[in-house]
Amino acid sequence: MEDLASAFQSDFFEAVKVLEDFSSSDNALKDAMAEIRRRISAKKYVCAPNFWEDLRSTLQAIEQRRDERAGKLKAQQLLKQIARLEVKFWAKASVAMLKELDAESRLERIVDWLQTFGDGDPEDSSSGPAVLFQVLSDVTLQKDFEAPQREALSAAVRDNLPKFPVEMQALLERVGSVTEPRSFAVPDWRRRHQP
Image (cartoon, rainbow, N blue to C red; front, top):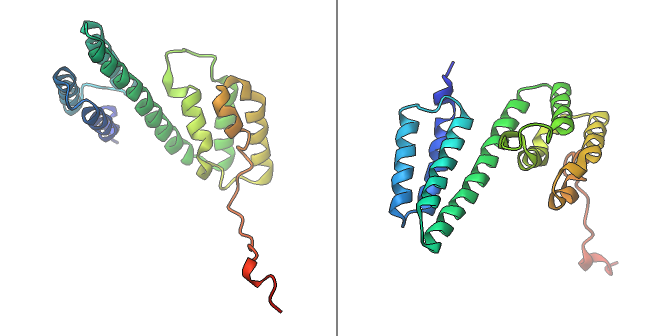
């Protein structure tokens, strides 16, 4: 079995690549990304939260050292990009874990997650509303659900909808109703008046 330092190494390198592309004109940020890349190669991160925390703290330190407004703004933009990359990472890992479960167990884990998220550590972004939103938006997790399971998921989402930011709520109201694309015939307007 792969060790924890190697399990997500490609994901970590991918995140650093995005950040390097974003900060290519800033030498301090480039140097920081090179150091993070070195730590990934040396397998210094024993778990994913360590990587994300180190990435955030490294960039926050750069932001705090900067005096000029433009430099601070660039570091702040990079911190926002890290937050997006971290949500994407945790959603991908969560979906992969859930896909390994049978439909009933998957439903149970999702419902439990819906009922308990928000109760834990506010600094833990691995299970926050953005990650859960991404997971719930992945229709492949529902594809083998029977009608009662889809209804149970839909009910759990409705019951916990207020926990999500307003901009996510309208999209989440449809969770559980998506099964497979329905095909239906669209009448051809050109043939309407033909005998």
